[in-house]
Image (cartoon, rainbow over all chains, first blue to last red; front, side):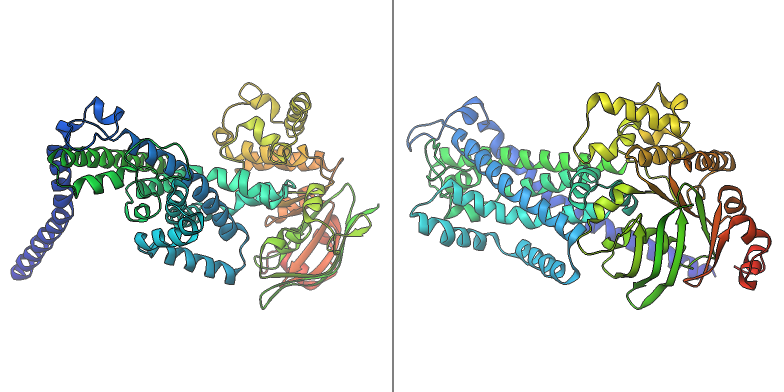
Length: 279
Length: 252
């Protein structure tokens, strides 16, 4: 009797230790990355960083203002393309879809979200950059939108399915057509959850570098045309980090710090939206 | 008495299940008809075929005719949305729209269809709420959430929402089964009043309720209509042995 209790307690201790170890294995790298980025980047995050474009090599100072603006523009365009497609696709799947075609669409979305982002970039390159004979912000936005669509689609579909059927029926029984019911009752009831999915998808593409490498290409200067190469934060970080100049390295670290902070904030916001829904 | 809704050889299948078998029945205008029977006898299925709610279930198949006034609602080319505007429905569990205020819930049938006339809306909300005897209880908090009402109030709100769009027929699927006795009484009184203007078809598990509120009663068993007639007759001298057994509580 006593032996078995002792054995049970030992087992319990062992398992607890294993789980604590697993938790630490997840947390420690995250903490290391964060601490390292803050240590390397914080000193270079100043007003110039947010207001100036990169200086030519040899001059000190400069910032990533054009990269931040470019990222914002391309994310906004990718959202304008990807969010409606994702949401309407999800409404189709959750409210209308016949069983076979829905299965195909779901499978396609899952495959799409698993495709390496460099390949998404290559697709946008061959579809847009080659025919348009030049790198462009537009091509970059399309590449990012392709990454957003499956994320928005699947999270929205899950949220729509959680809306109780009785609400749908209440609306239909009032003589409201299904499409109006889907938009004004079902989607509206699921709105906070849908917002969470959208924020997560934005956080995901905000840091994507590979799909922009041969679509938006990057730009050392301000660019206002969507048909021309445009700067983006992840691209600038990449280019500065592989450069041989000490000053550019510092800017790259500062960019990394700002980017991680933005993504962290977006994830927190997504969490917050998710929580208010559960309440 | 004129017939408002007439079912002719109605059959409903769900996949391989034959849920409603060859049912023919007349529902007279401006009266209350109760549909009773044990669980799974097809009561709700019959009710939901009268406003084409089955259209949304891919596995459901409805055959036969349902004549509303003088036209078959399952005819090709009939828009189910137009039928649902004429045939309203009240559900078992109160289901007000949670994101909407009391006011918006009553006017929802107009608002969701995108046609609200501000000045008309106030009148519709007030008269609908008065009709369900909810006006005095909520008139000072029309803009608060409908979820703050009690279950019985919510159900009366749902009835107000249904009559606000001026239907001709109201289907009620066990409207009081989730409510306490006092709220149930209020709903029953309301049904009595509503039949002046509407044709009411109510599914209920509660035989006393059927006896209290209805003019006619239809007894269903295993998807078939066993007997249908004046409520007084069904509950005192039914023609069929099965009906008598069910009503006296010997089975079901």
